[in-house]
Image (tube, rainbow, N blue to C red; front, side, top):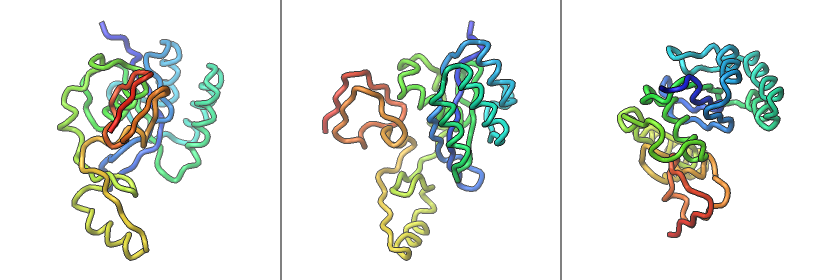
Length: 204
């Protein structure tokens, strides 16, 4: 039987109009103690029917206090810093390890994998390719392919050069997190969601 305390993430999101393009989760928890997960649920108001949302400043403050009280001082400090960012914050809470139903839950699971918080083939990723759009991963962040020409023109007029690294559903892992104890000669070869054990070397 699945437990009802699978994962939680708090981070910064990037949107194109209403569409979620990416999320960076510097705060991650996987299978935390039941009482801790319950407090996360109480503070965020998230549940199985509403598993993601933009937190208010009051909620972020309450989360920081919860992290501090549980000995997660680094996460408490990070939450307070994220609250001052220009990008919108996003919180995602998954009660069970079920097939992802949207991009927010997929982004959380990809972070869990690359952070070594879940093992390969141990989390449900059914249907992720149909839920994630193909994006242009550029020097100015992810851009829907149909907006590339306009964004390239804007960049050139402003004296910048827009560099497109790839057209894919997944970005480079190293743009989001780097697991300790690895060597990666060409970061473009390793995408978010890859699980690299300590001591792994990836050459060209």
